Image (tube, rainbow over all chains, first blue to last red):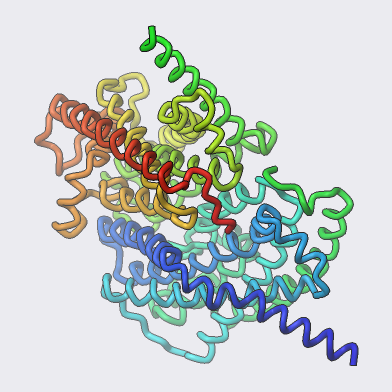
Length: 275
Length: 280
């Protein structure tokens, strides 16, 4: 009986925390607009750079796909990693802590809601990008493509849950760290060019970020030109690594949440605001 | 006497705001970490361009377009820092720290206070710009003439502060969730002002919009100042004409910015927006 009740509370918490992102985030029209418009602006600028240097048309597609996937990375940074910092600033974090529920359920709700809301924006970025820049994609293997995409999301949001626990200790550093992790990750994950251009060592190191492998694999499955000299690893291998990363990050997130919450309680950092 | 008093109040506001801004920008980390933080982000942005050119462009980094693109991208660091920086100051002071109402009740000149906060962001941006230009010269072979900079061309930079105040006025009467306005404007300018590709690469209607934006001429002026070369599109424009365009647009922007800001301020007071907190 007790176990069933805990299970019910867990899923109600997941749904409760996902709700503002699935429903609430769509009500704020200016957010929807900016979250589509800002990545599109970036994509457009990079598309014109490639046009100026007369790049092959596939590279325009790489940029559009990279721009759409960047929406997920931004969501992980600002709405997962930094989220508990915002909650601290607005006074919600104490309520999370005293509520009789699992903090993992709260993080999971944030992640599922974020995935849903960001997917709507990513679809918009890809659709508008394809129409504006006449990008053609060839879907060669739908099940593998879907597998890569979903596994990338699970691993990426697992990383977000891990970072969220870590950021629990931070004050303003959380904001700055999220800000800092935008362009460098765009660079090392190859958002706007094939990651292989960075060399095998850097690409291998960057593979700790699920979006690096996910993007490389999806490009292989959507743009046959990637199958030549441009891919980093075969898509099937990347899918296997992504699955491993997904499991690893979820386990680490669970442990990190317990550890950092205890540490933050001891050091009295859970309720400090304006730090 | 009164004019002297307001001048000294304005200067004091500027100085104190610049100091406060510097503290807010930098004191969350030790100086070493802060220095790394200030450099890594722009460096990564520049390296994305470097790799795009290295992988694709004919001739790689020896492409004739690359020096202008690299310098344009490095200098553009100032644009979001000042533009988005000033409008973000209003959001931060109003909604995060809850201090904007106290700024208004203190003997402070709000306009120079905001410019002062922009100065702090400009200082951080300057560190990054200088490091980027050094990287370009020393590691990538970008021929920057540090010894022969054409300084009159640099004067148009003041224009950015007035753009910032204009955007600050808009922010005064909009809610926190419009934080994206600054980024959107900066992103739009990045695209439309020929920063990272020649302006005539854009469709003609977009290129025409770009040619109507003063920042396009600022980017061109800064390229000429640092590289001594003209882009093909503006090759017919003399340096004197460029300085005149920048001076004229700075004066127009200054008048417009102060006017819009004062109107927005009046509206914000009337509607009780100076201490608005959205709590999200």
